[in-house]
Length: 354
Ligand SMILES: NC(=O)c1ccc[n+]([C@@H]2O[C@H](COP(=O)([O-])OP(=O)(O)OC[C@H]3O[C@@H](n4cnc5c(N)ncnc54)[C@H](O)[C@@H]3O)[C@@H](O)[C@H]2O)c1
Ligand SMILES: [Zn+2]
Image (cartoon, rainbow, N blue to C red):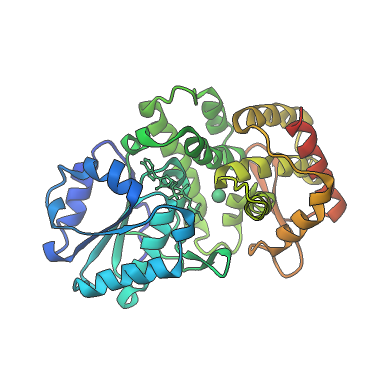
């Protein structure tokens, strides 16, 4: 089930979704959401033709519910309601719902078609696009999953009105990443965007540009053998920050962890690939103003380094970084020494405390 170019950014959600569901039998329509997307987002589907035919499955909100037991509940719901290979599963929610619902649909009876309607900025620009599905297992994020493309991804910025500021800027970090790895123009338009007074029409254009960048890498390398690794910029250190913050009981949102990770990895890019100093300085100032502080000390370095080594994108024992030669110029599979990595954490602490 490969569906290239299946992402639509639209304010015509009703007609796009109506068109998709008209191709499926009315008794084979299933909707997966969480408590918040049911509350804030389901009302926007009110005018979609046949929407009342959907059978609903509601998962409790929160990353802790991205679990095998939630997948089991979706399988049971599909099974008890007669879902089969002619069915359609629509996932309405943030990345938690789209990852989980896509996995459940991809594995039920060896796979039924699914549509993602992402309702957070993070899921619109990142999680719902690219076909990575799965759930957390044995204390490890996204430990179980498959890569399988949705029939359609429908992105509508009207859903974002109810998102809080922290979740909003969390998604924005992945857009910054897209600009950094691929497009100085995209980065410029993001810098000009007023995060304190979001304009949703302008945001629609920005999302569209950002998604095009993600799709470019996914289409070139769907299974992440080479160039798709560009999308991991900021994530080696970012994932270490994310896991460490969780262990220390002050969990960072994913995008914040990535933003902080990008600060360290921009510095590493300078050491390893000659990323220009002046650009590093400007970018660091901007990113730390948007994302605030995340405090680490020298005593945390070993534990963080250990966590970077656990990142599943690594190749055996090597810590595999994706770095930048300049904005828009990526270098994948970069080996950095432990000393360089620690130096980048020193840099992170300096600008973070500035
Ligand atoms: N598959 C991928 O390629 C990929 C990429 C990045 C992240 N992810 C995954 O995505 C997840 C994070 O995504 P997320 O940040 O969207 O998390 P999320 O789905 O948990 O959503 C964050 C919060 O916002 C709520 N919410 C959702 N839509 C809302 C709306 N319109 N208004 C108000 N509240 C709303 C949710 O209920 C939740 O409480 C993680 O599980 C991560 O692993 C996957
Ligand atoms: Zn990410």
